[in-house]
Amino acid sequence: MEQVKVLIIGSGPGGFTAAIYTSRANLQPVLYEGIQPGGQLTTTTEIENFPGYPEGTNGTEMMADLKKQAQRFGADIRSGQITEVDLSKRPFRVVVDGTHEIEAQSLIVATGASAKYLGLPSETKYRGMGVSACATCDGFFYRKRDVAVVGGGDTACEEATYLATLCKKVYLIVRKPFLRASKAMQERVFNTPNIEVLFEHNTKEVLGDEDGVTGALLVHTSGAEKEIAIDGFFLAIGHHPNTEVFKGQLELNPEGYIVVEPGTSKTSVEGVFAAGDVKDPHYRQAITAAGSGCIAALDCERWLMANSIK
Ligand code: NDP
Image (cartoon, rainbow, N blue to C red; front, side, top):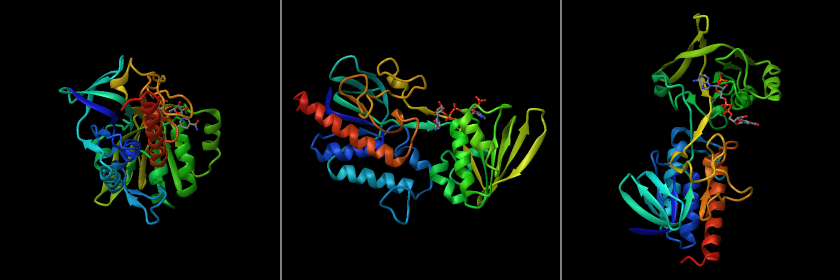
Protein backbone atom coordinates (compact mmCIF):
# COMPACT_ATOMS: atom_id res chain seq x y z
CA MET A 1 0.00 0.00 0.00
CA GLU A 2 1.25 3.51 -0.78
CA GLN A 3 2.64 5.34 2.26
CA VAL A 4 2.33 9.13 2.49
CA LYS A 5 3.61 11.42 5.23
CA VAL A 6 1.24 14.36 4.62
CA LEU A 7 -1.94 13.85 2.65
CA ILE A 8 -3.84 17.01 1.72
CA ILE A 9 -7.42 16.72 0.57
CA GLY A 10 -8.79 19.64 -1.45
CA SER A 11 -7.43 22.13 -3.94
CA GLY A 12 -8.76 25.55 -2.97
CA PRO A 13 -6.55 28.25 -1.44
CA GLY A 14 -6.46 26.34 1.88
CA GLY A 15 -5.23 23.07 0.37
CA PHE A 16 -2.72 24.65 -2.00
CA THR A 17 -1.28 26.90 0.70
CA ALA A 18 -0.87 23.86 2.96
CA ALA A 19 0.89 22.14 0.02
CA ILE A 20 3.24 25.10 -0.51
CA TYR A 21 4.25 25.18 3.15
CA THR A 22 4.60 21.42 3.66
CA SER A 23 6.55 20.92 0.43
CA ARG A 24 8.93 23.76 1.34
CA ALA A 25 9.38 21.99 4.70
CA ASN A 26 10.42 18.91 2.73
CA LEU A 27 7.46 16.82 3.91
CA GLN A 28 6.69 15.54 0.37
CA PRO A 29 2.96 16.20 0.54
CA VAL A 30 0.49 14.49 -1.76
CA LEU A 31 -2.60 16.54 -2.59
CA TYR A 32 -5.81 15.20 -4.10
CA GLU A 33 -7.75 17.86 -5.96
CA GLY A 34 -11.24 16.47 -5.44
CA ILE A 35 -14.38 16.87 -7.46
CA GLN A 36 -13.87 20.58 -8.24
CA PRO A 37 -10.17 21.22 -8.90
CA GLY A 38 -9.33 24.73 -7.73
CA GLY A 39 -12.40 24.89 -5.51
CA GLN A 40 -15.09 27.54 -5.31
CA LEU A 41 -12.88 30.34 -6.65
CA THR A 42 -12.95 28.77 -10.08
CA THR A 43 -16.67 29.59 -10.19
CA THR A 44 -16.10 33.33 -9.69
CA THR A 45 -14.75 35.69 -12.29
CA GLU A 46 -12.45 38.44 -11.14
CA ILE A 47 -10.83 38.59 -7.70
CA GLU A 48 -9.96 42.09 -6.60
CA ASN A 49 -9.58 41.66 -2.86
CA PHE A 50 -6.72 39.16 -2.59
CA PRO A 51 -3.68 41.13 -1.41
CA GLY A 52 -0.83 41.37 -3.88
CA TYR A 53 -2.83 41.72 -7.09
CA PRO A 54 -3.20 45.48 -7.66
CA GLU A 55 -4.98 44.89 -10.98
CA GLY A 56 -7.05 41.97 -9.66
CA THR A 57 -6.84 38.44 -10.95
CA ASN A 58 -9.11 35.69 -12.11
CA GLY A 59 -10.12 32.78 -9.85
CA THR A 60 -9.08 30.06 -12.27
CA GLU A 61 -5.70 31.71 -12.92
CA MET A 62 -5.06 32.24 -9.24
CA MET A 63 -5.70 28.59 -8.51
CA ALA A 64 -3.46 27.54 -11.41
CA ASP A 65 -0.71 29.80 -9.98
CA LEU A 66 -1.09 28.35 -6.49
CA LYS A 67 -0.89 24.85 -7.94
CA LYS A 68 2.29 25.71 -9.88
CA GLN A 69 3.79 27.29 -6.80
CA ALA A 70 3.18 24.13 -4.75
CA GLN A 71 4.54 21.92 -7.56
CA ARG A 72 7.66 24.06 -7.76
CA PHE A 73 8.60 22.84 -4.27
CA GLY A 74 7.78 19.24 -5.06
CA ALA A 75 4.16 18.82 -3.96
CA ASP A 76 2.64 15.80 -5.69
CA ILE A 77 -0.73 17.07 -6.95
CA ARG A 78 -3.12 14.48 -8.28
CA SER A 79 -6.64 14.39 -9.57
CA GLY A 80 -8.98 12.13 -7.69
CA GLN A 81 -11.58 12.13 -4.98
CA ILE A 82 -11.32 10.67 -1.51
CA THR A 83 -14.19 8.22 -1.21
CA GLU A 84 -13.43 6.56 2.12
CA VAL A 85 -11.34 7.25 5.22
CA ASP A 86 -10.58 5.32 8.38
CA LEU A 87 -9.28 7.63 11.06
CA SER A 88 -9.69 5.14 13.91
CA LYS A 89 -5.98 4.29 13.97
CA ARG A 90 -2.72 5.58 12.58
CA PRO A 91 -1.52 5.54 9.90
CA PHE A 92 -4.87 6.64 8.54
CA ARG A 93 -6.34 4.60 5.71
CA VAL A 94 -7.64 6.62 2.79
CA VAL A 95 -9.26 5.36 -0.41
CA VAL A 96 -9.12 7.39 -3.61
CA ASP A 97 -11.83 6.99 -6.26
CA GLY A 98 -12.99 3.78 -4.58
CA THR A 99 -9.88 1.88 -5.63
CA HIS A 100 -6.47 3.30 -4.69
CA GLU A 101 -5.57 2.80 -1.00
CA ILE A 102 -3.12 5.01 0.85
CA GLU A 103 -1.73 4.97 4.37
CA ALA A 104 -1.22 8.52 5.60
CA GLN A 105 0.70 9.56 8.71
CA SER A 106 -1.11 12.89 8.80
CA LEU A 107 -4.02 14.49 7.04
CA ILE A 108 -4.89 18.07 6.15
CA VAL A 109 -8.57 18.36 5.25
CA ALA A 110 -9.35 21.32 3.01
CA THR A 111 -12.40 20.05 1.18
CA GLY A 112 -14.23 23.39 1.35
CA ALA A 113 -17.91 24.13 1.28
CA SER A 114 -20.32 24.49 -1.58
CA ALA A 115 -22.84 27.27 -1.94
CA LYS A 116 -26.38 26.09 -2.36
CA TYR A 117 -28.16 27.09 -5.56
CA LEU A 118 -31.85 27.00 -6.40
CA GLY A 119 -31.36 24.47 -9.16
CA LEU A 120 -32.85 26.46 -12.04
CA PRO A 121 -31.30 25.87 -15.48
CA SER A 122 -31.29 29.65 -16.12
CA GLU A 123 -29.35 30.15 -12.90
CA THR A 124 -26.69 27.73 -14.12
CA LYS A 125 -26.64 29.38 -17.54
CA TYR A 126 -25.79 32.81 -16.08
CA ARG A 127 -23.42 31.64 -13.35
CA GLY A 128 -20.43 34.02 -13.47
CA MET A 129 -22.46 36.29 -15.81
CA GLY A 130 -24.53 37.98 -13.10
CA VAL A 131 -25.38 34.97 -10.95
CA SER A 132 -23.12 34.73 -7.92
CA ALA A 133 -23.12 33.14 -4.48
CA CYS A 134 -20.68 35.65 -2.97
CA ALA A 135 -21.55 39.32 -2.58
CA THR A 136 -18.18 40.11 -0.98
CA CYS A 137 -16.44 38.68 -4.05
CA ASP A 138 -18.62 40.07 -6.82
CA GLY A 139 -20.71 42.94 -5.40
CA PHE A 140 -18.24 45.57 -6.53
CA PHE A 141 -19.02 44.80 -10.19
CA TYR A 142 -22.60 45.99 -9.66
CA ARG A 143 -21.92 49.48 -8.36
CA LYS A 144 -24.86 51.86 -8.92
CA ARG A 145 -26.90 49.04 -10.46
CA ASP A 146 -29.92 47.03 -9.28
CA VAL A 147 -29.43 43.55 -7.87
CA ALA A 148 -31.35 40.85 -5.99
CA VAL A 149 -30.36 38.62 -3.10
CA VAL A 150 -32.21 35.36 -2.42
CA GLY A 151 -32.58 34.14 1.17
CA GLY A 152 -33.85 35.23 4.53
CA GLY A 153 -31.03 34.22 6.89
CA ASP A 154 -28.14 36.17 8.37
CA THR A 155 -26.01 35.72 5.27
CA ALA A 156 -28.71 37.08 2.97
CA CYS A 157 -29.30 40.09 5.24
CA GLU A 158 -25.59 40.73 5.60
CA GLU A 159 -25.04 40.49 1.85
CA ALA A 160 -28.08 42.67 1.09
CA THR A 161 -26.89 45.43 3.46
CA TYR A 162 -23.37 45.19 2.03
CA LEU A 163 -24.67 45.39 -1.54
CA ALA A 164 -26.90 48.33 -0.55
CA THR A 165 -23.75 50.37 0.12
CA LEU A 166 -22.64 49.82 -3.49
CA CYS A 167 -25.77 49.32 -5.54
CA LYS A 168 -28.65 51.57 -6.44
CA LYS A 169 -31.30 49.13 -5.29
CA VAL A 170 -31.30 45.70 -3.68
CA TYR A 171 -34.29 43.34 -3.76
CA LEU A 172 -34.28 40.73 -1.01
CA ILE A 173 -36.28 37.74 -2.20
CA VAL A 174 -37.62 35.77 0.79
CA ARG A 175 -39.77 32.68 0.39
CA LYS A 176 -41.45 32.95 3.83
CA PRO A 177 -43.52 35.85 5.22
CA PHE A 178 -40.68 36.59 7.68
CA LEU A 179 -36.89 36.66 7.90
CA ARG A 180 -35.03 33.90 9.69
CA ALA A 181 -32.09 36.24 10.42
CA SER A 182 -31.28 37.61 13.88
CA LYS A 183 -33.29 40.63 15.06
CA ALA A 184 -30.26 42.93 14.72
CA MET A 185 -29.72 41.90 11.10
CA GLN A 186 -33.42 42.26 10.32
CA GLU A 187 -33.38 45.80 11.69
CA ARG A 188 -30.40 46.69 9.54
CA VAL A 189 -32.28 45.46 6.49
CA PHE A 190 -35.52 47.28 7.36
CA ASN A 191 -33.59 50.50 8.12
CA THR A 192 -31.76 50.51 4.78
CA PRO A 193 -33.86 52.58 2.39
CA ASN A 194 -32.57 51.05 -0.85
CA ILE A 195 -33.43 47.45 0.15
CA GLU A 196 -36.89 46.24 -0.82
CA VAL A 197 -37.89 42.97 0.83
CA LEU A 198 -40.14 40.82 -1.32
CA PHE A 199 -41.69 38.38 1.16
CA GLU A 200 -43.35 35.15 0.02
CA HIS A 201 -41.64 35.22 -3.36
CA ASN A 202 -39.78 32.47 -5.12
CA THR A 203 -37.67 32.76 -8.24
CA LYS A 204 -39.15 31.03 -11.25
CA GLU A 205 -36.50 32.05 -13.76
CA VAL A 206 -33.36 34.17 -14.01
CA LEU A 207 -33.70 36.29 -17.14
CA GLY A 208 -30.83 37.38 -19.35
CA ASP A 209 -29.26 37.89 -22.74
CA GLU A 210 -25.85 37.26 -24.26
CA ASP A 211 -24.29 39.85 -21.90
CA GLY A 212 -25.65 38.25 -18.75
CA VAL A 213 -28.46 38.71 -16.26
CA THR A 214 -31.14 41.30 -17.04
CA GLY A 215 -33.87 40.35 -14.58
CA ALA A 216 -35.75 37.70 -12.64
CA LEU A 217 -39.23 36.28 -12.90
CA LEU A 218 -40.71 35.88 -9.43
CA VAL A 219 -43.81 34.13 -8.27
CA HIS A 220 -45.73 35.10 -5.13
CA THR A 221 -47.27 32.36 -2.94
CA SER A 222 -50.66 33.56 -4.26
CA GLY A 223 -49.53 32.53 -7.74
CA ALA A 224 -49.08 36.08 -9.03
CA GLU A 225 -45.98 36.54 -11.18
CA LYS A 226 -43.82 39.64 -11.40
CA GLU A 227 -40.64 40.58 -13.20
CA ILE A 228 -37.84 42.65 -11.70
CA ALA A 229 -35.05 44.28 -13.72
CA ILE A 230 -31.64 43.48 -12.21
CA ASP A 231 -28.02 43.03 -13.33
CA GLY A 232 -26.90 40.79 -10.48
CA PHE A 233 -28.60 37.79 -8.85
CA PHE A 234 -26.99 36.72 -5.57
CA LEU A 235 -27.73 33.44 -3.83
CA ALA A 236 -27.50 33.44 -0.05
CA ILE A 237 -29.47 30.33 0.84
CA GLY A 238 -26.68 28.64 2.74
CA HIS A 239 -23.59 26.52 2.15
CA HIS A 240 -22.94 22.89 2.86
CA PRO A 241 -19.49 21.83 4.02
CA ASN A 242 -17.96 18.95 2.10
CA THR A 243 -17.58 16.61 5.06
CA GLU A 244 -19.75 13.61 4.17
CA VAL A 245 -16.77 11.27 4.07
CA PHE A 246 -15.68 12.32 7.61
CA LYS A 247 -19.07 11.84 9.32
CA GLY A 248 -18.74 9.74 12.46
CA GLN A 249 -14.95 10.07 12.40
CA LEU A 250 -14.24 13.75 13.02
CA GLU A 251 -16.20 15.99 15.35
CA LEU A 252 -18.53 18.12 13.23
CA ASN A 253 -20.80 20.95 14.37
CA PRO A 254 -24.57 20.64 13.84
CA GLU A 255 -24.22 22.18 10.34
CA GLY A 256 -21.53 19.65 9.42
CA TYR A 257 -18.45 21.92 9.65
CA ILE A 258 -15.29 20.40 11.14
CA VAL A 259 -14.72 21.51 14.73
CA VAL A 260 -11.15 22.63 15.45
CA GLU A 261 -9.43 23.60 18.67
CA PRO A 262 -9.82 27.40 18.78
CA GLY A 263 -6.87 29.26 17.29
CA THR A 264 -5.44 26.09 15.69
CA SER A 265 -6.23 23.67 12.88
CA LYS A 266 -6.36 20.64 15.19
CA THR A 267 -9.43 18.45 14.77
CA SER A 268 -10.84 15.92 17.23
CA VAL A 269 -8.43 13.30 15.84
CA GLU A 270 -4.74 13.71 16.55
CA GLY A 271 -2.78 14.01 13.31
CA VAL A 272 -5.77 15.36 11.34
CA PHE A 273 -5.83 19.09 10.64
CA ALA A 274 -8.43 21.23 8.88
CA ALA A 275 -8.09 24.33 6.72
CA GLY A 276 -10.37 26.63 4.76
CA ASP A 277 -14.15 26.81 4.47
CA VAL A 278 -14.65 23.23 5.67
CA LYS A 279 -14.07 24.53 9.19
CA ASP A 280 -15.20 28.14 8.67
CA PRO A 281 -18.88 29.00 8.24
CA HIS A 282 -18.25 32.69 8.91
CA TYR A 283 -15.50 34.35 6.85
CA ARG A 284 -15.27 32.12 3.74
CA GLN A 285 -12.69 34.25 1.95
CA ALA A 286 -9.79 33.12 -0.24
CA ILE A 287 -7.35 34.98 1.99
CA THR A 288 -8.71 33.47 5.23
CA ALA A 289 -8.66 30.00 3.65
CA ALA A 290 -5.05 30.53 2.53
CA GLY A 291 -4.11 31.73 6.02
CA SER A 292 -5.70 28.69 7.61
CA GLY A 293 -3.86 26.44 5.11
CA CYS A 294 -0.61 27.89 6.41
CA ILE A 295 -1.72 27.28 10.01
CA ALA A 296 -2.63 23.66 9.20
CA ALA A 297 0.74 23.07 7.52
CA LEU A 298 2.65 24.47 10.51
CA ASP A 299 0.53 22.52 13.02
CA CYS A 300 1.06 19.37 10.98
CA GLU A 301 4.82 19.89 10.65
CA ARG A 302 5.17 20.46 14.41
CA TRP A 303 3.03 17.44 15.20
CA LEU A 304 5.09 15.17 12.93
CA MET A 305 8.26 16.45 14.55
CA ALA A 306 6.91 16.05 18.10
CA ASN A 307 5.95 12.47 17.29
CA SER A 308 9.27 11.75 15.55
CA ILE A 309 7.50 10.74 12.34
CA LYS A 310 10.02 10.79 9.54
P1 NDP B 1 -29.51 29.87 6.90
O1 NDP B 1 -29.69 28.41 6.75
O2 NDP B 1 -29.62 30.48 8.24
O3 NDP B 1 -30.59 30.63 5.99
C1 NDP B 1 -30.84 30.22 4.70
C2 NDP B 1 -31.95 31.09 4.14
O4 NDP B 1 -32.14 30.72 2.79
C3 NDP B 1 -33.29 30.90 4.86
O5 NDP B 1 -33.97 32.11 4.92
C4 NDP B 1 -34.00 29.92 3.95
O6 NDP B 1 -35.41 30.06 3.95
C5 NDP B 1 -33.51 30.36 2.58
N1 NDP B 1 -33.58 29.29 1.61
C6 NDP B 1 -33.06 28.04 1.70
N2 NDP B 1 -33.33 27.35 0.59
C7 NDP B 1 -34.06 28.17 -0.21
C8 NDP B 1 -34.64 28.03 -1.48
N3 NDP B 1 -34.53 26.90 -2.17
N4 NDP B 1 -35.32 29.08 -2.01
C9 NDP B 1 -35.42 30.24 -1.32
N5 NDP B 1 -34.89 30.44 -0.10
C10 NDP B 1 -34.22 29.41 0.44
O7 NDP B 1 -28.12 30.18 6.17
P2 NDP B 1 -27.15 31.43 6.34
O8 NDP B 1 -26.07 31.23 5.36
O9 NDP B 1 -27.90 32.68 6.30
O10 NDP B 1 -26.53 31.25 7.80
C11 NDP B 1 -25.83 30.07 8.18
C12 NDP B 1 -25.39 30.20 9.65
O11 NDP B 1 -24.38 31.20 9.77
C13 NDP B 1 -26.55 30.65 10.54
O12 NDP B 1 -26.40 30.03 11.80
C14 NDP B 1 -26.32 32.13 10.67
O13 NDP B 1 -26.87 32.67 11.86
C15 NDP B 1 -24.79 32.21 10.67
N6 NDP B 1 -24.34 33.52 10.16
C16 NDP B 1 -24.07 34.48 11.09
C17 NDP B 1 -23.66 35.72 10.68
C18 NDP B 1 -23.34 36.72 11.71
O14 NDP B 1 -23.52 36.43 12.89
N7 NDP B 1 -22.89 37.89 11.33
C19 NDP B 1 -23.52 36.07 9.27
C20 NDP B 1 -23.87 35.01 8.38
C21 NDP B 1 -24.27 33.79 8.84
P3 NDP B 1 -36.31 29.53 5.17
O15 NDP B 1 -36.14 30.51 6.27
O16 NDP B 1 -37.65 29.55 4.55
O17 NDP B 1 -35.82 28.16 5.49
